[in-house]
Length: 224
Image (tube, rainbow, N blue to C red; front, side):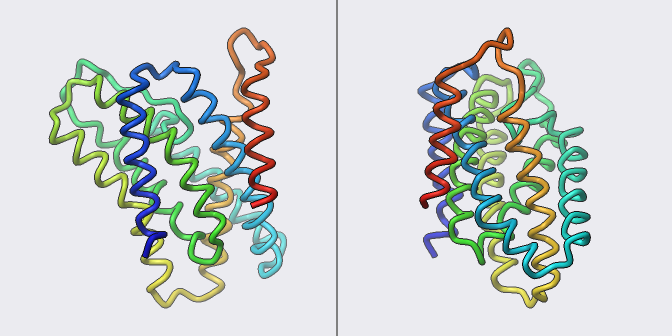
């Protein structure tokens, strides 16, 4: 039961951090985002990818991974990159950002599917959700939306990953379908994590603190 609560707790932690770090340019949120990207990518490579390639035909696996990458690109047409920390909301607008909301919820829903077979992936999704929830909360709290709209946005966003886990765990999906869905999620994770890791820094300068955060993320994922 606790595994269904962890993604919700991660979003709650993100909201609390948003209250303390009210600027999206906080060094802490940047480092946490880099760490989470490295951690998620490493866990995907160490845990999820070998399992899928072991049970699916290689070219079929590659096809579904590419579909996941393309799906994430399509989602980002609506979310503007919020899944990897680029939140763009018109703070003066009172019109609810439905496209952002639906895109983030669908992304979070899919994140829940591979967790039932790979407990370690829970930690990858958990660490990934904290900085994203922090950045989304910062922008929402600075926007002109009502408290009800903000609360509803964050509440639904928080429960989407557990919903994906619930469906994955308690429906009679065949192992073939499950593996194909996992391959799609691998593509989504690849796109998000590599975007976080390889996007240019300020002035294209080497950032030692970001590099250390990435190394820590990879190292912890390896020994987990």
